Length: 557
Image 1 (cartoon, rainbow, N blue to C red):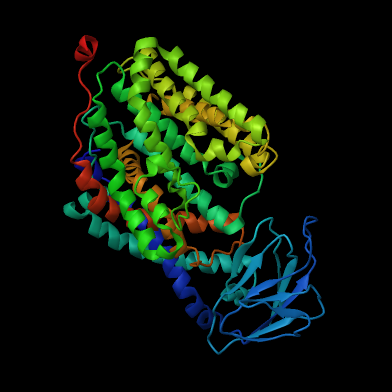
Image 2: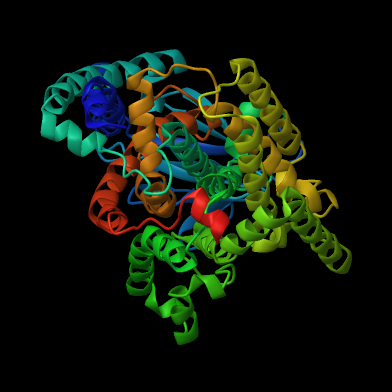
């Protein structure tokens, strides 16, 4: 990605960050503008428990978070549970919340398996919210939505505010980004590898992997685990942890593409890996140890600095629980040069043999423990399948796809259908916490997942598609930020999860969440990561060295 291409895309970046401005602006302005435009205000509301239509609901409870508003209720029917009021489920005994003039603070109700439905009445108009959820999760109810009334009116009102803010922000940001130094800072440039020609399409896939993890963690924060769907698009959100598998397969694929047929210097290779990972990782560790120092023993704190000897799966990582993958990646990097050497000497059958051994050990683990899910997901025992399949696909591409040769887009379409089918089936069975969780299938799931993603990697990387620069350059830049995005996204989710703009969509619904993540969380994560990449990652990336020699020297060696 060159600066020339990057400077041709100010409109794309202006539109991207205008989403962030529009969403935050609507969330801030709507509570203030709604009473003015609709000529009325809320002085009180009542909340009544009603039975849920969901047959899985175990009760009709309502868990209302306490706030500064005055609350009136029968203490026998609404129990004071510290930070919450809990209804016993009697529909004849509502709770009344009284507001100060002009006060439109949202109310927060916890959804759970014991929840029924809540009928909220304002000025004689009632709205019913189904609160059942298999896992506990909060739902924020915006009072301005209750004030407006009909959902269609709420949608028109909310999106009108966002549209006005988007257009205004877009015009201003476009003017700013058209300045050369600004767009250069935003769009960046590729730190091309000293070992292989740069491929922007692999960066595209890196961003897709990081984005899937953002959507997944936002979804689990809102709804918990345990949902199931055969809808492939929903499955990619609800089972978005599959983005980790894409990262793993990409690592095996890219490193083998670099090293195949060449002599690899082990120490220079590991030096480059440390320069790639440790600066930002150590920043995260320092943040954890200073912010939550009371949670760690000395041994646990020390182990954070040496993740390759500790899986991190059993160490408390507030806001960074996903960094267990760093340990798995580093463990693979320690082994990769030897795997590549022996694969070069003995052929792909060597990697197939190693894959068979790891599958056998997962099967043995399953027979001993009755489950292999955690080991398959959190450790190298499971993830090695994905690294190995990435390596084998790179060797396949080297042998059968000659330089300059491209594949028909039909192969890409077929790989997308295959991947969608795999995720649909996996998601429809509840994923790792559903019916598959303790089954023997989890022995083979890491390899199945890797094959599906690997097919997409090969067909997309070599597809006969001419990508326009307005698409190629920004997406490659986002992929460049993928490591920062992966490491820091959950910190940003914690900041954005309580900011909600009026969309007219059902509060607490998946559609409302998707709008929230797309317009607010993803742009906010990217904005933060542009700083961490430029200030923390990039200076160290420039210190990397070439760690491969030519094919001729490798043959002599």
